[in-house]
Image (cartoon, rainbow, N blue to C red):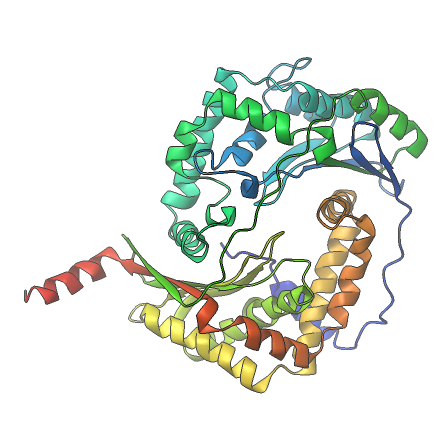
Length: 453
């Protein structure tokens, strides 16, 4: 599955809406921000336009906070958090929210674990109690651990071990990083999943699921004063914990290209390429986000036009800017058509990048990407759940939710010259990692030729 945002419809809109936007930032909403005595950061945005409430609870705990031996524990916790607490038995969380017409889910990233619900205002008290109780006293026993361990292991088998793209992605990050925790995926390594102990889970919970390591955001149909009273009532007595140890970015600079081959049963060869990039807070981050759209904006993106339509050597191709809290990767993936090779795909991707570096991008091409980013951002901002997620992200990772309102203006200020400059700096052989998928039958033929058979 293509990573990053889906730009196909958005880029089509970009081609229609070719006039530059007014440049006016979206009007700032009235957000009430408070910090409880235990360190819990709370944002509340009252809006009665839609009669629902969205809750987003972000913990600063992702796979970057793990170590060898417990990789995958952050994602495992995402599952265990739904299996009961001191006041609520297993299954009660989903049952109570769904009975009130609401929905709930969660996701884990390399940097955070986030829980979100949307429900009718009448369910506000019970949802706050549910979230507070699992922050205070999650049911952490061997049954919970073993049940979710089995589920997560199966998820790894499906999405990584038995997925060609998943296996290639894991090998890419394993190879591109040698010291930073980004070198393992959020799903973790299978042997580590087997090795995680109940004591590991309890220590992790005490450290990372503390109120002073979380951001709670609520958006929707409530009265702010009443809401904050409820939040203080249910969350205020949860004890703070010592701050988690900082993640040391000990990753050394990459001094040259790295390569790895993946031999797997497959019909067609494929290639995945990663280039080192900075964090999502770096000055170049907006240009890289727009580069993703220019290169991989659906069928109108440069890669799809060149490799699929013109050269007809690929059945699928995409690019993704995977900037994170610490430096990440800008990745490319392409799968060959029958009769084509991974080497041809690789060289075709480099040719697209070299053309961009040599000749730059047109103002219209840049405007299409900027329009796509604007549409995606506005689609999230106009819903209660989307806005709650944005507020949580910027408050937790940028230190101030108001940074959300600078995102579009930063993208709008990017020029074609900056796009070209960033591409020239990032897409270099020295900071490139390449993973090649070699179908097993092709590998056997090569071995036979060497033996003279």
